[in-house]
Image 1 (cartoon, helix red, strand yellow):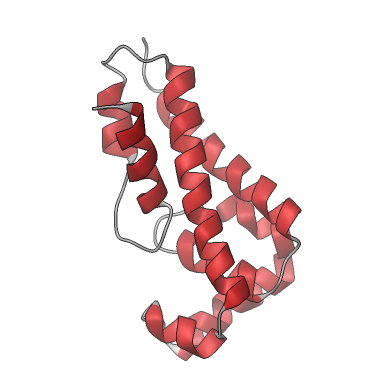
Image 2 (tube, one colour):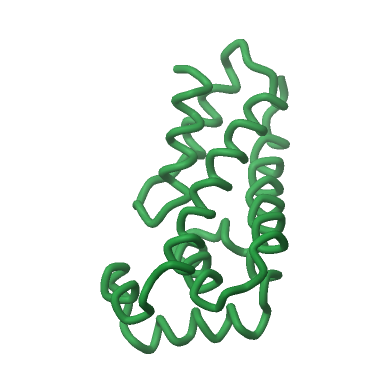
Length: 138
Protein backbone atom coordinates (compact mmCIF):
# COMPACT_ATOMS: atom_id res chain seq x y z
CA UNK A 1 0.00 0.00 0.00
CA UNK A 2 1.03 3.58 -0.47
CA UNK A 3 0.16 6.96 0.96
CA UNK A 4 -1.65 7.72 -2.31
CA UNK A 5 -3.88 4.68 -1.74
CA UNK A 6 -4.63 5.95 1.77
CA UNK A 7 -5.45 9.42 0.42
CA UNK A 8 -7.81 8.04 -2.25
CA UNK A 9 -9.51 5.67 0.19
CA UNK A 10 -9.93 8.42 2.79
CA UNK A 11 -11.23 10.80 0.11
CA UNK A 12 -13.83 8.30 -1.12
CA UNK A 13 -14.79 7.50 2.48
CA UNK A 14 -15.37 11.23 3.03
CA UNK A 15 -17.96 11.30 0.26
CA UNK A 16 -21.40 9.72 0.26
CA UNK A 17 -19.94 6.38 -0.85
CA UNK A 18 -20.34 3.64 1.77
CA UNK A 19 -16.64 3.13 2.40
CA UNK A 20 -14.40 3.31 5.45
CA UNK A 21 -10.73 4.21 5.66
CA UNK A 22 -9.99 3.24 9.24
CA UNK A 23 -8.97 -0.37 8.54
CA UNK A 24 -6.48 0.69 5.88
CA UNK A 25 -5.09 3.44 8.11
CA UNK A 26 -4.55 1.02 10.98
CA UNK A 27 -3.02 -1.61 8.68
CA UNK A 28 -0.57 0.97 7.36
CA UNK A 29 0.72 1.73 10.87
CA UNK A 30 2.79 -1.45 10.58
CA UNK A 31 4.56 -0.01 7.52
CA UNK A 32 7.42 2.44 7.17
CA UNK A 33 5.34 5.60 7.52
CA UNK A 34 5.26 7.82 10.57
CA UNK A 35 1.99 8.22 12.42
CA UNK A 36 2.14 11.93 11.59
CA UNK A 37 2.34 11.24 7.86
CA UNK A 38 -0.51 8.73 8.06
CA UNK A 39 -2.62 11.18 10.07
CA UNK A 40 -1.96 14.03 7.65
CA UNK A 41 -2.71 12.04 4.49
CA UNK A 42 -5.88 10.49 5.93
CA UNK A 43 -7.09 13.85 7.25
CA UNK A 44 -6.46 15.63 3.96
CA UNK A 45 -8.14 12.92 1.90
CA UNK A 46 -11.17 12.64 4.16
CA UNK A 47 -11.44 16.40 4.54
CA UNK A 48 -11.44 16.94 0.79
CA UNK A 49 -14.06 14.21 0.47
CA UNK A 50 -16.21 16.10 2.98
CA UNK A 51 -15.67 19.32 1.05
CA UNK A 52 -16.88 17.55 -2.08
CA UNK A 53 -20.17 16.86 -0.27
CA UNK A 54 -20.29 20.47 0.91
CA UNK A 55 -19.69 21.70 -2.65
CA UNK A 56 -22.45 19.48 -4.02
CA UNK A 57 -24.80 21.03 -1.51
CA UNK A 58 -23.80 24.58 -2.44
CA UNK A 59 -24.33 23.89 -6.12
CA UNK A 60 -27.38 21.69 -5.94
CA UNK A 61 -31.12 21.64 -5.73
CA UNK A 62 -32.33 20.43 -2.29
CA UNK A 63 -35.01 18.09 -3.68
CA UNK A 64 -32.72 16.48 -6.23
CA UNK A 65 -29.94 16.03 -3.68
CA UNK A 66 -32.31 14.42 -1.15
CA UNK A 67 -33.42 11.90 -3.80
CA UNK A 68 -29.82 11.29 -4.90
CA UNK A 69 -28.79 10.57 -1.30
CA UNK A 70 -31.91 8.40 -0.89
CA UNK A 71 -33.10 10.58 1.95
CA UNK A 72 -36.72 11.01 2.80
CA UNK A 73 -38.05 14.55 2.99
CA UNK A 74 -38.12 14.41 6.80
CA UNK A 75 -34.48 13.32 7.07
CA UNK A 76 -33.40 15.96 4.55
CA UNK A 77 -35.24 18.69 6.46
CA UNK A 78 -33.75 17.47 9.75
CA UNK A 79 -30.20 17.67 8.36
CA UNK A 80 -30.85 21.07 6.83
CA UNK A 81 -32.34 22.27 10.13
CA UNK A 82 -29.21 21.17 12.01
CA UNK A 83 -27.00 22.90 9.48
CA UNK A 84 -28.97 26.13 9.79
CA UNK A 85 -29.17 25.97 13.59
CA UNK A 86 -25.51 25.23 14.27
CA UNK A 87 -24.01 26.79 11.15
CA UNK A 88 -20.40 26.02 10.29
CA UNK A 89 -19.90 24.46 13.76
CA UNK A 90 -21.84 21.43 12.53
CA UNK A 91 -18.80 20.74 10.35
CA UNK A 92 -17.12 19.28 13.44
CA UNK A 93 -19.60 16.39 13.21
CA UNK A 94 -19.03 15.55 9.55
CA UNK A 95 -16.83 12.63 10.58
CA UNK A 96 -19.78 10.75 12.10
CA UNK A 97 -20.71 7.56 10.23
CA UNK A 98 -24.08 7.67 8.53
CA UNK A 99 -24.92 11.31 9.24
CA UNK A 100 -21.67 13.14 8.50
CA UNK A 101 -21.84 13.07 4.71
CA UNK A 102 -25.48 14.21 4.45
CA UNK A 103 -24.66 16.85 7.06
CA UNK A 104 -21.82 18.18 4.89
CA UNK A 105 -24.25 18.37 1.95
CA UNK A 106 -26.76 20.17 4.19
CA UNK A 107 -24.07 22.67 5.23
CA UNK A 108 -23.61 23.47 1.56
CA UNK A 109 -27.35 23.79 1.02
CA UNK A 110 -27.55 26.11 4.04
CA UNK A 111 -24.74 28.21 2.51
CA UNK A 112 -22.66 28.21 5.68
CA UNK A 113 -19.47 30.31 5.40
CA UNK A 114 -17.07 28.18 3.39
CA UNK A 115 -13.84 29.13 5.19
CA UNK A 116 -15.19 28.35 8.67
CA UNK A 117 -16.96 25.23 7.42
CA UNK A 118 -13.78 23.99 5.74
CA UNK A 119 -11.68 24.51 8.85
CA UNK A 120 -14.21 22.80 11.10
CA UNK A 121 -14.71 19.83 8.76
CA UNK A 122 -10.95 19.28 8.64
CA UNK A 123 -10.64 19.76 12.41
CA UNK A 124 -13.34 17.19 13.17
CA UNK A 125 -11.93 14.63 10.75
CA UNK A 126 -8.38 15.24 11.98
CA UNK A 127 -9.40 14.74 15.60
CA UNK A 128 -11.13 11.48 14.69
CA UNK A 129 -8.00 10.13 12.98
CA UNK A 130 -5.80 11.38 15.85
CA UNK A 131 -7.96 9.49 18.35
CA UNK A 132 -7.77 6.36 16.21
CA UNK A 133 -3.99 6.59 15.86
CA UNK A 134 -3.61 7.25 19.58
CA UNK A 135 -4.62 3.63 20.08
CA UNK A 136 -1.52 2.52 18.16
CA UNK A 137 1.97 2.47 19.58
CA UNK A 138 4.74 2.64 17.05
